[in-house]
Amino acid sequence: MRHYLLAIDQGTTSSRAMVFDDRGQVMASAQQEFPQYFPHDGWVEHDGMEILRSVMDVLSQVMGSLPDGIYPTAMGITNQRETTLIWDRDTGVPIAPAIVWQDRRTTDLCQKMKQDGLEEMVSEKTGLLLDPYFSATKIKWILDNVDGARVRANKGELAFGTVDSFLLWHLTEGRVHGTDVSNAARTLLFNIRDMAWDPDLLHLFDIPESLLPQVKASDHHFGDMALFDRTIPITGIAGDQQAALIGQNCLSPGQVKCTYGTGGFIMMNVGDKIIRSQNRLLTTVAYEIQGKVAYALEGSFFCAGSAVQWLRDGLKIITHASETEALARSVDSTGGVYMVPAFTGLGAPHWNPAARGSLLGLTRGTGRAEIARAALESVGYQTADLLEAMTQDTGISCEGLRVDGGMVGNDWLLQFLADVLQVRVVCAQVSETTAYGVARLAGIGSGVFRALDERSKGVEKNNLRMPGMAVDHAISLRENWNNAVKSTCYYSKG
Ligand code: ADP
Image (cartoon, rainbow, N blue to C red; front, side):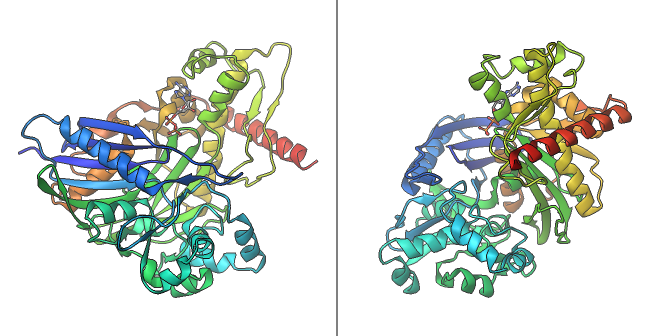
């Protein structure tokens, strides 16, 4: 008998629901955007009830479009991570707008805590950095700034959750206040060694424990939802990057995935031991499945597809992102041109927020092809820098890179990645790796699959690129890039 698995993918700008069969074929899909709010410089908010409505809409669309007689065996939830909601336990209605992961309003608080020398302690327990990105300071902000919030929290009238938790609460009609380990690990309150909320951190951030959801394994049977006259078990929850790691089948230590969208997000499975980075990469919980916890190292760079967007919207040298492929192919090299796309600073492992972008090595021979190629190459170099940092931190050399996201439609880029990284690059067969990952998780949790790698063989072979460039050449390109980064940082300081 065929089984079907329903995935909710609640992202930063849109909500999506997808149904997969147990071979990974997409049976139905629906997507809906929801409003973003920017009330002040650096603030980013969502309305929790608008998120919920968008999820309910895509759920009914996707269920309505399934062929007769098909009903999913189980469902999973994957979500934008860190985004913080606090709601009334009686009504389920948030007491304030959701503070989105991108929101920087708690920068000063984080800065102060760093100056007080607290980062090492926080990092040691959580694997994260003291940054506004994560939930703890956002929770504190709501408790300190919304009328009556702290008093009500102390009385146990309120509940905190990341988006998975908020959805779980509503899908189970207020019966379940829970989350999974991968989401809990992004709050700055969860001790990834003990795998539990940490009393010292709760004290430090002044957050009452009564607010917090129960933390369960990622493949736990979290609860049940009444959906289309039947009941569906919710048997998988994971944060979006962790779900993509599962969707990409990165289930063994050393396996790495990178998602190339606006930015680049790399995650390496490091197995059951915590590895602290010397390069300010994050250590996080990848998942807990069938009683086993896996950890991951995570790093990101801010600018991947956004460099291509700049060619289109800023420089106006292309009209579609895909034109960069033919342009890059039309020349043998960039002719010594390097683009360091530090439009909003440089992320890991350079960590230079003050840096701004540069184009170096221009000659009279430089044209749009060289510049487009330099933009694509910068994506490869930034990936190489992060992978090198991960290899240094873990002592595990990466056997290949699994890629997904909007940019992997660019075939030239895939080959350049294999060349400059000198590893094989495997492009995901299922393009929606995040939703697919949580569908598989729900499949494990509900017993459709006995093991996570079951029925995933086809994903491996598809769209493989092998390194074709001589090692020496790859090294010299990376040396030039490193010099370009140094020059860019030097200029930004001056
Ligand atoms: P996000 O999820 O961050 O919105 P997507 O995964 O949808 O991003 O990817 C979109 C990004 O990929 C855009 O920045 C776009 O410029 C870039 N992109 C899409 N197709 C191509 C292509 N063929 N070549 C290069 N860049 C591309």
